[in-house]
Image (cartoon, rainbow, N blue to C red; front, side):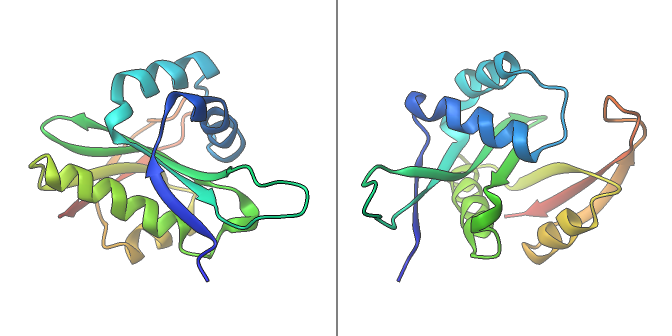
Length: 154
């Protein structure tokens, strides 16, 4: 039985997207930065919502998101996060597939993303999705950590 479904993000999802982004992505981005990005790139935002109903609630619970943009003539994954209790249930994989499909539909052939050099688990996750390390950007993050840029042909 599926525990979640995907859909395009809508404005009413924004506070939960901000919550997930801030809780799961080490960043200096403010809520305002994230909201500005959402409004400028909302065609490339998807969310995962829980389909499990409880006695206490029948409301949708946003459990993950992916946000992308067009950068340098290709698709770019700018942020992805899944609530800890829903990890390792293919939520992240399905979110990436949805965004890749949108990029492909819009005639983009390549997708890129950055990952912290220290984030081995993220690197393994992206490599399982077919992404390959491309190059390093020195001191990419505000704390001085380098980023490893990954790319995938879709």
